[in-house]
Length: 193
Image 1 (cartoon, rainbow, N blue to C red):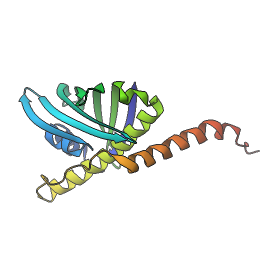
Image 2 (image 1 turned 90 degrees about the vertical axis):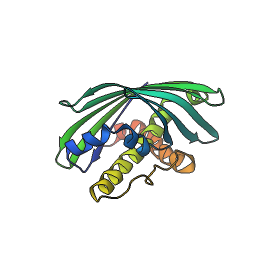
Image 3 (image 1 turned 180 degrees about the horizontal axis):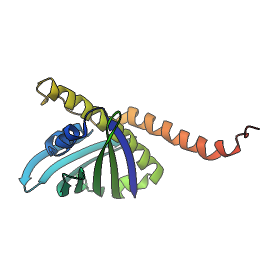
Image 4 (image 1 turned 60 degrees about the vertical axis):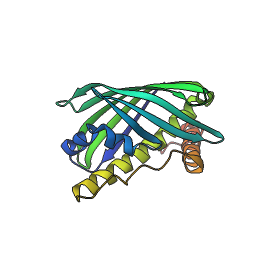
């Protein structure tokens, strides 16, 4: 399934691009993600843990930068992993494109995601909503890390919070309700005369 999100980071595009090229910094900004080993040649081992209601998944996997275009500010990362308890697998291709906007930098994140096992039991809408919540959290973490780096602070302790629990579920449910409201109620709204 393809999931797209746009986020705005209030920093110049060159600064955000430099940040996106530092894969350990990016991983530290992703809720529930942890790099465990730099394999060299833009390849990494890592873990991603997420809780969606009663389902807790922890994936061990590999990520590799497939493409890095400095002129176009475009980065493509391939990642795949398996749940530690054998309950499923996930793979994704993440394409990040950065562009300057008046507010700073817009990052278009396109995630081509394939799930199997326990995670695949959730519908496309729920997975998309949870991904949107995580991308919003990621954008906030990127902003905080870049600002801390600008101030000369040590960012090693600025790790993203785990991707879990009630907060994500609540925010995803709000997105789902908004989608239902738009689908069923907005088409019937009286038109102005």
